[in-house]
Image (tube, rainbow, N blue to C red; front, top):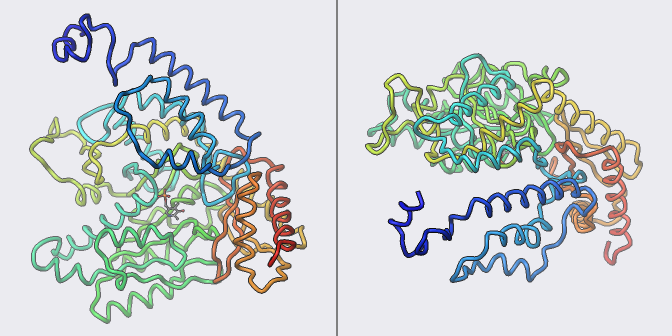
Length: 500
Ligand SMILES: *Cc1c(COP(=O)(O)O)cnc(C)c1O
């Protein structure tokens, strides 16, 4: 081996091939660095709760990181860990910390951390050919489909996250719709494509509209449909919008429901939407990036009746399941639809046996795909088990109840309606200034800056409110008390601040 490398690159490997040049290293150097990195990561994770949730990034560090200057000569491998320890790790988003409540950002599951390292070492590309990780991806996708309540035979692909899964879903829906009309190509395509119309609730995640833009739908073909008083898509409003567009000669091709709206955690009704889609020939995509795995949880199950009838479902294991980012998935009851949309041939890529399964690259837009998603997801599910998945979601529901009780018990806070997913939206009841929205924004910022807890704001029915999501398995009841304390403390500071 040394001889061969030496022959190929004599100038880089020295006279005797004894001192490997980057990117190669001696086996012992690699081992020592991996051990040091593992020890550091274990200590970092265990000490995380004692430190601040986040820290301001000093200007000098920020400038250095952004400057993007590469030295002429390479450095020691050991410098990587030093750099992470000093310049990266102290300034995270904060989502590893138990007092982080913003957005839906989980801490990483330990099983996933171990698996990501191992998957990087194996470095299989999960798009083409045959390898064990690609089959593991097929298997983990089946586990997800089963947990989500999709029928036997469902499949899908892992993605970088929910946004990518939504993009794949809309592209698949479009191909399915046009193919059925015989206008997937040719002159009829131009005529039909310009009339495609997409429906989703006004509470849908912005990634849906973004995905629509990516597949070439203009904004005036998007229909954000009204919601009911519980922030769920109103099926009657959907039907009215679709009917009006059909009458106008447009082509309604897809309706998107949301399982867990970002603001208040609402779950859209599924069965009436599927029924409408079937009757007019539309695709029903459900965006369950946050709440897609709720069907198996008894307390949530009534909201998920009919989930098995959707045409595609986004789930995001890097949210509720704490798989390290980025791991999302698009699940489909009939995997053939993905192959119709994404299987493209090329002379340099030929599958093996005629009866072999389609490559995963034939079910998505990526060719060279990481194995970290499949192994990180498998390891996390392996550690949790089926009961553990249910238990984890139930744990978050119980913590959301605990937080809501604390808010309700505090006269200076007002709980807003929300759920069924584990989130609490609330307001400060005694804003004495004339700008309650501004006050809530400043209070959230102050909480973030103080560094002991972290939450964000969201707009609910036109008002800015505080929002705390429960998706962190490290959060304790003390962290809930701390959050309330930090919010009240920040509100006090705002009231006594000049102009507050
Ligand atoms: C988070 C989220 C997304 C986007 O998922 P990413 O993994 O952040 O790309 C889409 N839809 C919903 C409902 C979400 O909660």
